[in-house]
Amino acid sequence: MPARSPLAPQSPAHDLIEPEGVDALLCHRSFQAMNTNVQVFIREGGFAPLLAAAQEAFQREEARLSRFRPDSELSRFNARTTDRFPVSPEMLRVIELAQRFCRLTQGLFEPAVLANLEAAGYDRSFELIAAAADTPTGARLAEARGSVLDLRLGPSDLTVEGPPGLRIDLGGIGKGYTVDRTAEVLAPARDFLVNAGGDIYASGRGPDGDGWLVAIADHFDPAVDIAQLWLRDEALATSTVAVRRWQRAGRWQNHLIDPRTGAPVDSGSVSVSVIARTAVEADVFAKTALLLGPHEGRRFLESRRLPGLFALSDGRGGLTRDWPE
Image 1 (cartoon, rainbow, N blue to C red):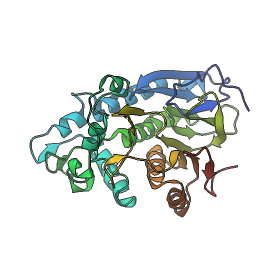
Image 2: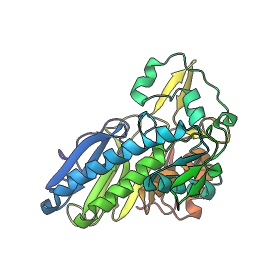
Image 3: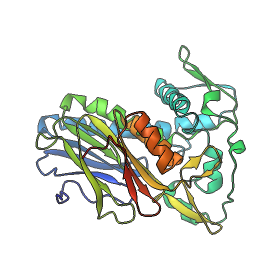
Image 4: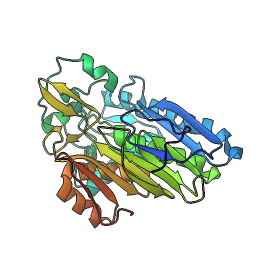
């Protein structure tokens, strides 16, 4: 098992995936965005100026998509008092993607569960949740007031129309979208990797020409790897209930709401890692497979020929048949 490189510092507990063997890299930048540690690696030193552009891309999308910033475009959208609201082309695109994946997963991916997240206690940035001991629990789906599919998009005039009470959370898909947008910024470098708290896009040959070697850490012991694999022009994301969790009224809560119940998910899967063409797809399908549980989740991924790795609550694990050796 390769040692962790000094250029890829040990990630916080929620950074479940990180690159290995990057000593040969000339360019590296690490910064905080979207409540996680972001790492960007470029193989060739001549493309170093792109690192600043990558950080700017993250900061720009965080300012647009964070529900914890009252001045963000998403917060203004959720606070709207009219049926029709003007949005940026980027916000329109993210909502369009959210609707597409809501249909594709038959409603399992549903951003319109913000009321349920707040009722479970996730009503502020995660590091502040421990201070909120009096948060009520037991929210039901009806409080979410509909689905993201109830929003009507106006591409011609850049508007979104829907009832003001319908509020959405774009956290997961927003991070995947930002990783993919950052990959577009870095495209001239060809050989690069973006890691946003475990949402990864890896492009090109990697440090040694074989691709990018990444490690998936154990959720309860981040110093231990449960898998390592090579990525080449593809994305990897992990969805887990082991990290962003807290207690309310003696019960464990987590940040993944099952839209079928309106409550935090309890499916028997602790985490699911998925390899896909884009970070958005990897993120959404990992979350969907986790919501479905180990058996249905595996069938869901295999029906789409998506490689997946499951860690279960009883300590066992499982792989889809397409997971790389």
